[in-house]
Structure formats: C-alpha cells, structure tokens
Image 1 (cartoon, rainbow, N blue to C red):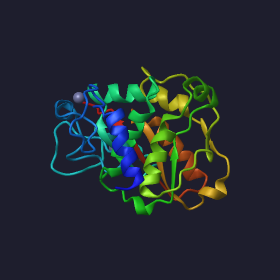
Image 2: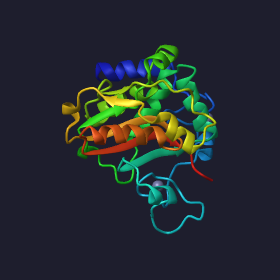
Image 3: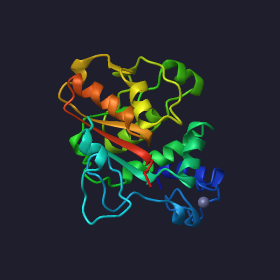
Image 4: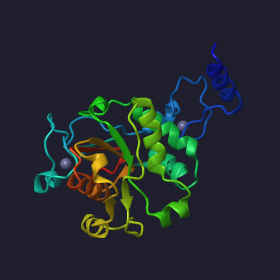
Length: 244
Ligand SMILES: [Zn+2]
Ligand SMILES: [Zn+2]
C-alpha cells in the first residue's frame, strides 16, 4: 500500500463518503457519489440530443437533430454537454456546493464529470480549460468560484491546463433566476472580456460551469472567446435545465 492509499483509507474511516443526495454513508464505498436509492431517481442525460446545445427531446426521436433554438441561431460554442438533468437530488447537491460552501461535494461532482463520457467531447482535442468567471463582487460574496473548483478537478484528471484569469467578467449582473431567455441574453451582453487574446489564439477551449439554464451565459463567454481568436469552444456543466 502506498502512502497516498493509506491516507485515503484513513480519511474514509474518519470522514466516510456520504451520498450527495441524502447524506447516507456509502458502504461499501466503490467510488460512487450517490446511494442506490438516490441513484435511481437521478436523470442522466442520454438518448437523442441536439448535437450542439445538448438538449433532449420530449418525443425521444431515434436520431440526434438540431433543436429549434440552435436552428434559429447557431450558438458560438461547438458543443454543450451536461451529465444530469437539473432537478431534485442534483439541484440539492449543487446547492450544497454552491451556497453551503461544501467544496468536497463540488470536487466529487467534478471528478464524476471528468470520468463521464460526454458525446462528441474528446478531451485530447482541447488545450485549455476555463471556468465561467464571476464578477469580483460576486466572488467576494460567495468566497469562491464554483466553476473554477470544477475546472481544476477536471483539468487535473484530464491533464488540461486551467486558466481563470484570461476570461474576465467586467459587468456585474444580478442573479438571473426568474428571467426568461431573452432577458438573460440582454443582461449578459458584453459582460466578458479577454485580457490577453494572444494566449487564446487558435486554441480549443473547454468552458466549465455548474448549470446550463438557457445557455445565455456560456454562449456570451464563447462569443467573447471566439471573437478574441479562439478556434473552438465547448461547454461542460454538471447539470442542464431541460425544457420538459
Ligand atoms: Zn442517497
Ligand atoms: Zn440545440
């Protein structure tokens, strides 16, 4: 047994891994993050999706096809993919992380993301990873950028460098909860800037966020990055709001 195995063994005894949904102790622990009861209730995103934004369809057609939104206006990102549908257990787990400052919940979710096989995402195609930035005011309020914590874990596992300062948020926006798609798009317009465009020139970038709601924020980030010279931007989130 190596030292790190001993330490991880010890920490499992002292801080036994708990289900991220109901806090039940996971025994035996095999690297899973939810107990079997919670696992059954979680909606993984699978089946046919929009190949660009990753939304699912209520009539579950046999093949992937562009959704109405992406047909109307193609986003600036190439692919947006999420692991889970944003509801119940996942919503609670993300809340634990984001608002109750339970960093280890975020790290476990991120580790799960890194091991998940997202359709059309080949990590070796990307040479830079970045979180959706928070405005300094929001960062001070929350104490950490939840997306940076996710990006760090995924970047380390996938050996992709993470940069959190090239993409900056210059405009403070109030929380977008309750705004519709059009309002969100308007609010977020011009909110980001790239501090040193040379460093992203011709790069394929993975942008990381916690939740994909309407896609307005990540699309504005992607627009800013592409206009500053990035080659391709893809988006990974823990969860996604699905339209049905
Ligand atoms: Zn559970
Ligand atoms: Zn779409």
